[in-house]
Length: 205
Image 1 (cartoon, rainbow, N blue to C red):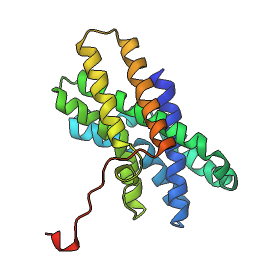
Image 2: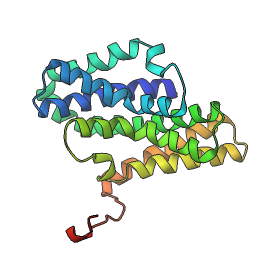
Image 3: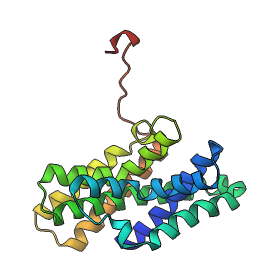
Image 4: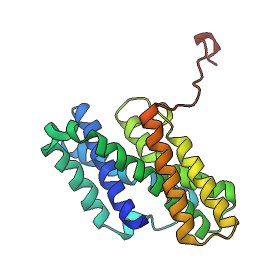
């Protein structure tokens, strides 16, 4: 289940990266790179921070073809993309949850303590989008829009708690995946957000 969700997720994320790059009028190389980084950047940062080498996509070069191809394909269908916006949001939500669970599993397999495992899941889930936005010179959307990074945190906590209670792996994955996806879709539907911090300019260091 996670493998299929992962493939759908990196494809969708690559397409969102290509759209962001296109709006910044980047050339084909720029579009390809942003698509690749958006899709695989979170897992890359996670692996580097955890010392998990070789980095995942270097063992699966087909992921390069998939993400770059998806990015370039987006340019071909861009005039119809706005009609598929709802599908993009669903795939993005699937990707967020799948990336988080995969990141947690990597941290567990490497024997890291729980706080590190949680951060590994969150970094995998959100960092591709952060890199995309930084490279496209815009504020990271994952830290501003409807519940996103916090959904990743909840999924990671739920997954680890169910494992701690001895729930079998398949049921744990299904439960955490379902709750995370439902929470993200509800956040989109009803615009759930965390309280924002608004400091006066004079508060800057």
